[in-house]
Image: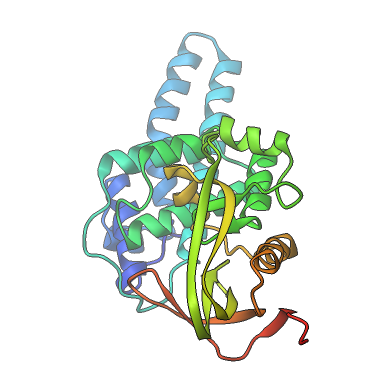
Length: 302
């Protein structure tokens, strides 16, 4: 079978130590037991004891069921742990803070039941993210994802293409998800149901004012003539779980979002709107943008 997580340096080493510690083994022990099915040995003990007891009582079918069930759980957890390893970069610096043991217990009790490959990849990203920076994903977020179906997860991925400025989805008429999709996301605890208004106030200046749209691009709005303009958007904010889970998705805004910003800018008589690549994400949460972009709208010169 090989080791559950191969021993390496920095983030990879911490992942190995974290999983190994949860199993009652340290990273070196996992390395030494690479061919001894370390994870299987630890997880099978209780199952085999239970199966032996069932056989002693003449319950052969029960014994076989127990062993098959535990093997499935073991393979699911092993797959997630190995996928988490692929999320690490060799030599990557990570937080030295250990992952909370209660968090690990809850995590592995959940992923033992996850067999869908797409969902396993999401859980692997969560494990890797928590190892890199503990407290990134709350227990409530784990429970939210645990109760989510693949179809619901697909709806959330779709919703990320409607995100504006990182923490809300646009609900403007004609520029939003369907009402049914919005209600579903609210029901599963990813989006708040209350409709809010987000306002961007922009002073007159020669340089564009930017609104971050996704992780790769922002919208630059030119307003050199009007003293103050305000762009208002109806949105629904992501919940805490939604904000934590959206970090797993390398989302890209749909044309709908850009069209919405252009429509609002036209209403306020802005001179031009451009789509510009993000050059750098700053620790403050702001971004710097490329001076080269694609023109989405330009006011007719008269």
